[in-house]
Picture 1 (cartoon, rainbow, N blue to C red):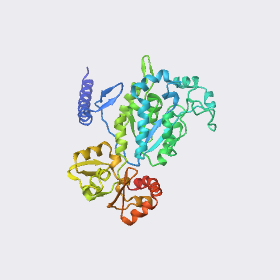
Picture 2 (spheres, rainbow, N blue to C red):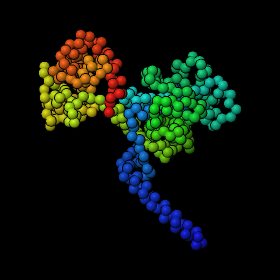
Picture 3 (tube, one colour):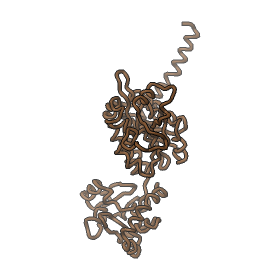
Picture 4 (cartoon, helix red, strand yellow):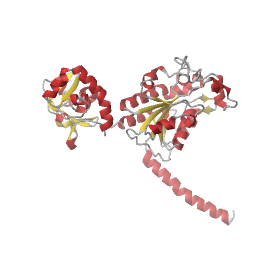
Length: 398
């Protein structure tokens, strides 16, 4: 070895060694005990995990190709993707994400895959493009013709239809090969003020990975939900394994569905009527006692539980345990704000003496006179309050 080569080798080792040690140290600090899901639990790699801290109103769930040809046993690709879909529990996990986003009031976007008759006249194609055209995958008779979609391989999986067809989900124009360069996804996300995207759907090493790459190149912060996708498995070729490596090396984070559901829920924010800095709800009265006693009972500061941004006190441990088993049943409606106030689209304080149980729910009002007005048209007041609460929550939640 020449002196110049020796010098270069020494300098290279000196440069790389500290970087490697730093990466391993940071990885061990940041990822200790973290598990990702790929063919079962797997210890995380010793590479940085930047993470994504979801911001309420700034993130969206993106589901790619939630269509029958990929996710139904009757779909044309089930013979090659079915094993991976089943291993990852993909169908159920995608539905859990839809539900979590719906519960959190988060934006949802769907990027579908359709092929129209003119797409079948392409003069050249890649390997799997050729296969998809050959098996008539995602076929539609035309962009202006919706006949024949219902129940076809291009249709949404039935269990997803209540979420996708809810009037709020944004279904962008179809992508034509794998990525979102050929549709209006980035435009729709930008116009909605979204800069963080949680990705799920099909297929992992094709459309999901391509969307991830495109969005990152467009400046979005991206997390991929690894067990809410799947891919073809063929002898010598595992599409999911290939995709997972790139998810981990390229995206800001890779989550399991459990982790994603928790993060989406936490990003919802809270809007609850509490007593000052103490954060005590219901003025310290035991919430279960409203349902079980003629008059509410004061809770003990020693017996408490947290729920939806408030700390509730309980008279007994039994009462606390009942609350924790079903907190949404016992917590006051509309975050403990005046129910009549919510029905006219304003947030007002409450007088605990106005508490009443109607239809097995706890309602509070600002004073006796307002309680009377609320009860004069109870069903109408509740209907208006139910309609107004999401908007009030969006405007005031923290």
